[in-house]
Amino acid sequence: MTFLSRASGSLLALALACWANSSAAQSSLTISGVLDLGLSRSDSGSAQNPGAGTRGSTLLKQGSASRLGIRGNEDLGGGLYAGFELEHRFLADTGEQDSDAFFQAVSVVKLGSLSWGELYLGRKIVPAYSLSCEADPTCWSYTSQLGRPYAWANYSGSAASDNSSVRRNNTVGYRSPTLAGWSSEIAYAYGEGERKRSLGANLEYRQGPVYLGLGYDGADAKNRLLLAAVGYGFGMVRPLLLMADAKGGPTTPGYRGQSASLSFVFPTAWGRMFAGLGHLRSRATPADGEERSTKLFLGGDYNLSRRTTLYVNFGSARTTGLTSSNAYDAGIRHAF
Image (tube, rainbow, N blue to C red; front, side, top):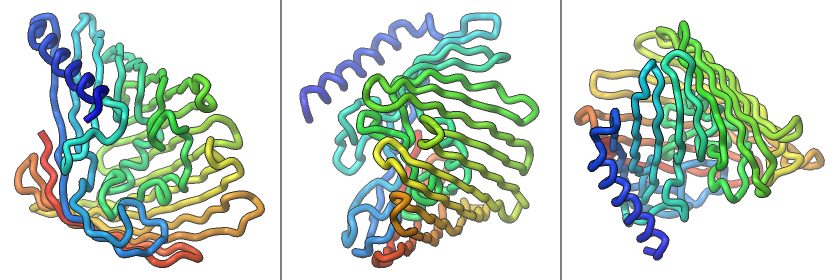
């Protein structure tokens, strides 16, 4: 572990100690997390198959991100509150943090009102991701995930400094309260010399069995992502449709892609099962030929308890001009 990692760990321990000593001045402090490990096997195929990991290998690895989260809220009276969110990502098989940034996942301070919504500042997941996480049964995890190719038409509005296709540094955002099932979020990320400034937004409706969503992320008309999602719970099955249209991006000027996915989630007495299909067609530049990719995915969760789940997943992908790719995993996930 580097000196920076040790120093970050020491600062985290000091922060927790300070919070414990000043708990009387705070409304709440929550520590939560996830540990996820399983065996994952992928053949050597080269098709676009997010979640397949190292091709041609069997690995002990996380299926979804292992994490440690700290959240605090202070009641300011009159329905107002202040707070923060910090989330650290790590690799449970080695204990190492999974990037140079200690709080790589989330790092925000916020001020909100129960009636008027919440203002936040810092590093945050972009609003459009909420739609893709709703429509992808795995929320971009495991070998069965849709991931960026099939949920976002392979769009990435990030630069290297963000170290993520769905997170932005230096963000100012607002999240509305939920009114009659409707909610919205808007976020503006300052590029600060690393990339273009970008805007993200979503509009979502959740009421009973119905889900509707619209999402946007982008810098301008030539570099943007549009999303639309719809779902309905029929009791025995919940179908979810997600469509994406992408143009450009900081690292792919001239790129154009469209994707669509249809997922089916089947609740069971012991957990759930799911299956679906994702399709992507894209051009790296206007002069290039069209590339097509398709992914079939299956999975299931068995709940040992409210916090512990056994899982198994399979994903099979085909891409124009590349060899087919198949991958599967099985493991255990514990949340606290």
